[in-house]
Image 1 (cartoon, one colour):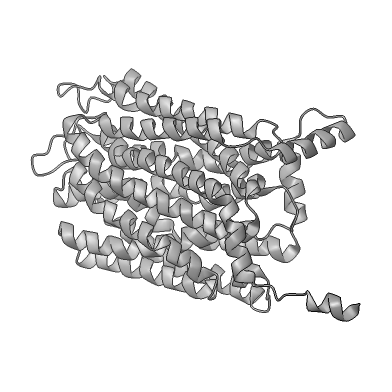
Image 2 (image 1 turned 120 degrees about the vertical axis):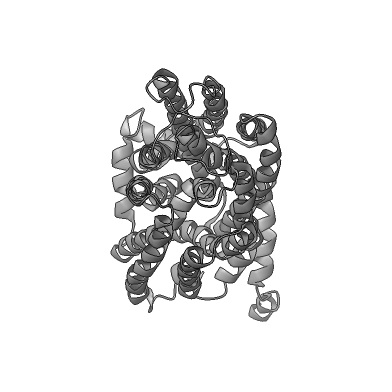
Length: 466
């Protein structure tokens, strides 16, 4: 009998099993990618053109005879406004993530908030149309429409953050940790495709009507959210567990602050320190990229007289490379040490900053340098979030909470980074200061990376290797 049983045992092909099980989640990968595609189109328009709307009309803002109408704000004031998403990310993301993990309607609410986000996004350029060539730059005269346009941007950022955390929690819960890196690479790839394609199209649309790039992003968000609501299944198993929990405790609603505390305590001491070190490393490594994403079009217009739509095409190269290398990086991260990839990303950031300061003068050169930064940023984005998720113990339903905690912590430095860079731009009258920030941040990032390596160098778990 023993021989008969032994004869039926077959060796397990782990790669084949992983590949087969991955097919079960292709729809989830697709939607995670499509959401990032739509958001990339929206925030591509937001980052490229909203700073122009806010700063346009200042006598010292444009060169080369290019006319840009707007509210006439300084770079510092623009940086403060553009940091709203980061402020909300730090203050509200953990609460939204925890609320989503304990919500019985996470999918529905996440989709509806995405639709509202798109509607608020449409209102930004619509309100800005009140600015005429005669009133352009007259901040006090345009104070009321300025207040409304900033409030519309705030509501857009709020609904994006809230709905985005709900949707991400839904998707990370629906896919096993084994496939989180694959899902992350889909997100980065689709986001890059969306940004590149929409940037090229938006550049043409911008010349027809400055509002059209915003309308394009909003339309995609509306379509994806509607399809998400109509086709993705409800969280039956998760909701059943929540109903049992609420019945056992006698509570109809969970306290999100308590949920965050409980999730943090679930992590081992080593995992907690790893979490913090990864976040500090990511923040420092990305320090200059945050400023470049906000002020790239302003830098090219002010420094080299490059029109905003041409600047958008120029920076699209960054996202093109970011897109092309995302899946290869995700696959590579499963085979080699993540520390080696992190070191490569920091070296690329440093090289990019130095070269932007020394040789960047024409569109082709700037495009070439964007290739370096695209690879460096992609390494950080593809690897960091799955690494955070891997810190959770197996079987714990807290993916939304850990995602939001990571997201809030990743952007915490940007709450001061973008306004600070705007302040130095105003102080020095030179947009090059953001490249010094890029170099300094990447150099400092080696410190937490070294301590993370020291902490985990003897750890053979998937946190390091996988």
